[in-house]
Image (tube, rainbow, N blue to C red; front, side, top):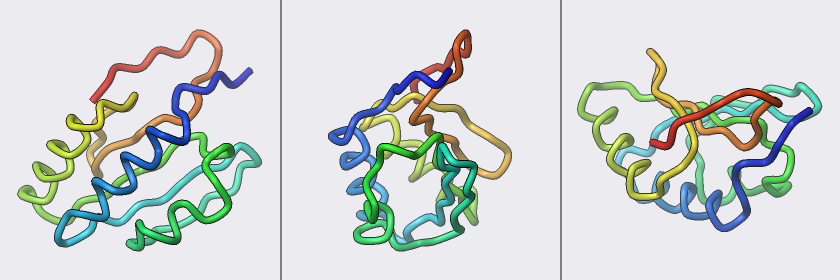
Length: 104
């Protein structure tokens, strides 16, 4: 069973923080129906298209170590459930029963 850990307000905060970064990081999502979307770099319109209710997680990718630090700093500002990965960061929209997550 999937349990929501994000709401529209937090998704919007994340979207706007990523939109403000230069260059904007690429992102990809996994939906509750199993569909993988991305990568995409357009945070203002594309990310919110269709709403947020079906995002299991979003992966945020970086290209350089300095971009990683910019993304990390922006994520800390928003304080979202997620984890750091070798490719970037994963922000959770849902967690499985028994799955735990730290906040970035």
